[in-house]
Image 1 (cartoon, rainbow over the protein chains, first blue to last red):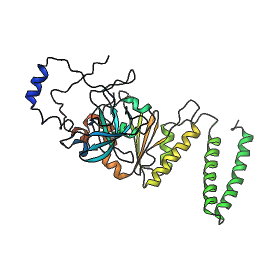
Image 2: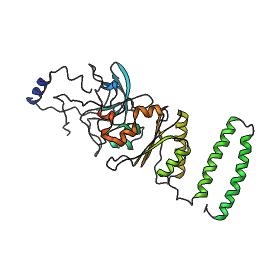
Image 3: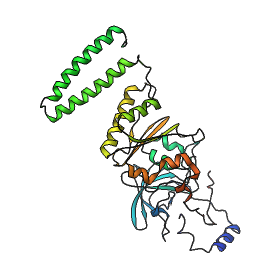
Image 4: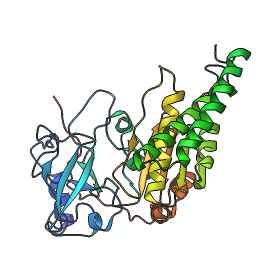
Length: 146
Length: 192
């Protein structure tokens, strides 16, 4: 389950109340994905969906600069293990006419490139198809395209 | 012009001569590398001459019929072609194919690429094999068609045919529990 690490700490009613009666404006962080960002796993793999007290964090981005955009492979630390994953959406606005997501979405991947889960519920951007890389497997198990 | 009668006769005679020569070479006790080279040459020449015989230049295009007949020729098991509806703007045809072993999958994929490269026009983009180093799943994306070569076990785990025919009514998809977002989740980013 995504965001399981956020839920138990703050009682839900108090959080909702706190959100409504804030006297300051809140802005979300809108950066791309780099080391130590917390990400949300969007496929139906067991590793991504079992609740754990710590969120999955990026520990390495396989890129020339350490900033990950859509289509980049990253190394995650999930449940005390290292796992590769592919970025399918981030909060940072990208090119015009490409989707911007409200959460940093990631799909778990094996070392040989096969996806760990079998279905992806979250929408996947279609411009992945035009990028250089092996994305057909993710597009094959995706349910919604954006 | 390749298909004039004179050139066809020339081609035929050349073909039979070369055929005999290559068969002799193959039957001799040549070394392993020579054997491979000769067999590849034989296959390429066969392909080239078949295409030159049976079509005037440019009429053979790499479409769905050709791809399916190619896969059948390669002994692909369980060829499944799904027509993808226009609303899903991904591709027109989604093809899933099984192979008996990793070597079989790799050979099928490489042969498909070889035929595509031979038949593509200059305006068509190049195509590469995705998942070349995976053992059980390889894909090729030709713009209007996507082919997936999988081992039967992998095919069972992913069940791509079910997903692409049933879309939202697929069992694996509906068994994903609904995810709830915490109440104080900050949605939008006010971008300057």
